[in-house]
Length: 503
Image (cartoon, rainbow, N blue to C red; front, top):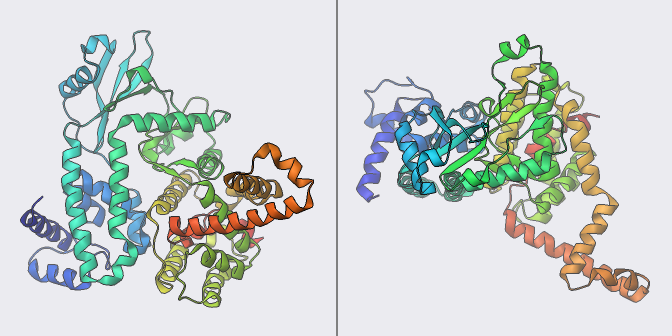
């Protein structure tokens, strides 16, 4: 995309933004003021921010969904609006889908599927058809849109250009790491365009959750799956957004709300791999009352190191040891060295203490998040884009659960899973396991472990190695996170385990 094309696109986007309600700090103040002057005769505030992004096309819808993870940029209110942004586009012709199938499998359509129906849904990257295998099993067939990669790459080029301009207008915006955020979003979209990644995600989630009798993940037909085609079993069910139908079928809505929350927490905390697009359109309830999870194009991962740091931070908050929670942030490098530990500890206390003793229904998540974002700015904490996906998914998941049970107590539902997770992460057995892993990375063979334990000198040496490895892991985490561990507090401490704090 040429420089002049970028400028033309800025005018187009600027015109639409000048007619809509957009976050005050979404654009630098001087550029927003300029837009209003240039387009002073246009009708103001005739569209919402979300609808404006929808009108600009698929890449902007993805941008909107991604911005829903960045309340620090657009504010909690706009983030909530964009969290419900629907990726719903017109369907493309069935004939095009047939040509893609024949090209991918290098054979006639009749040799691949016994039956291939009209599309039933379409989004920015792919659309879904129903069909049948030769043994009569009904399947859902997802097919990538033609030329979609080229279109997205063109828009991402513009996003990078715009991010560069925004940081040039205001150097303070570099803290928000727009370019890295766009890179993360682009990588996510590229993975969505290769349906083999989605198939792998389904397989992993299925393996993680196969012991549960409350959730259902569709089966994959690998022999009918390629880069551009994904074939999974067809699962009948009632959309979770159809509250009236769920009531008609006499489902327990309160229990369904619990299942939605606990299914997500189980994925994220116990397994460290979670569905990151759990809006109502991707959730069904089958005849047995089980939660059916669909569309695994967007996934999130919480690594072992992140989980360990999260557990340490939460422990400090649960025990109201705000200084310890602050120390963990400084030790991990989440907060810049030029900030003061005591002041950061005081900021955490200012957020946590007013919540103590409150009824869960009296606590506004939006207000808590707003306070947290103010703290991240005050202490010059850099954002970490990959962690924001977890926070956004939690907000969406809570919204889905509350649509089923407006009076649900999030903390009561979350406590059993979060408590068990923390006990596991902070248990002596876990610490010993981490120590053994650290020692093994230093070349100490595990099968020699009992021998050197019997020798006091070797035990002392191994302990020193363990301390050195622990410090090494902390330094590695500094490089990996580059801060905003405060997001981790946002994600779990104030959203899901507040009951433990209030206790």
